[in-house]
Length: 336
Image 1 (cartoon, rainbow, N blue to C red):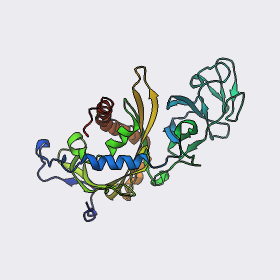
Image 2: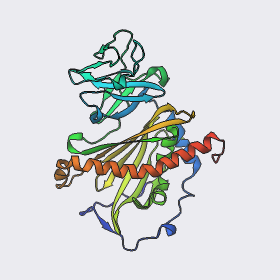
Image 3: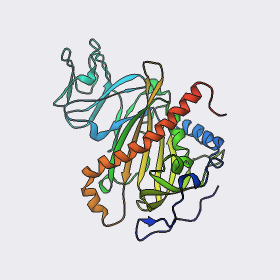
Image 4: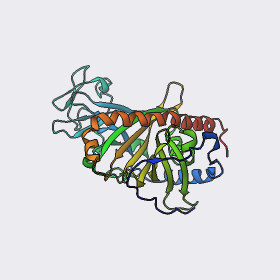
């Protein structure tokens, strides 16, 4: 399927739909959303290297006085900022008697175990070994070579995104009972947008999909973001999967051209019932060439909660999709 003509450049970002189509009367997409297309794209994404890097959270979520703690693939991890403000990372289990370092404070860049005072500055000490960590300015990544099973890369596979200094960014985090592939499969199904998220999207058309033997996956979509009533923002977006646990949406035409939404799926490990848990960590980086966007950047602290709330609303739906997919897969009932 080939991409259509470029979306027209609008003087005004908003559009008024002349005759809104009732939800049940919109064009069905189930024939175009071929399971084989999604499955092949998912398989190719799973084969792309991640270099054993896992997103664990937002860089701004690391305070000065305590660590950011996560469990990734069943391993407890802590990340904090040392005396120079740089990130340090390593196991979240104290090597002395197993205290949970997630509950330990940071003093002058040193993580101090609250059981017996063992102090860690991010370098090997008393059996504790640091882990490679990367701060891309928005997200924090940790490299886990013992569980990743891939040849390590020096840095994560980072998508192209706008300059953070010229954008408004926010990070949403959610939790699902599923595996990373279920999250990625959801994002590689753009056809569900206007049907499953009628509160947010209308007039969705998938213009281009990758072929079975495509070296690089790319889904091109024309869609309108719904504001209120008949008022919408039409854009063209392209979805790609740069590594095995990431899908990126780039807005290529329309309002917000250059904006990016990065969806990262981080496996956490099994819950008490043995079911897999996966964190969805989504970075939204919004930009615009319009002069008024400068004022929007100055209001970033007010806009971030709204951006996270919008992402949370969508992921309430999409996590249900991903969890349902895992339930069917785990019981052998997923459609072949």
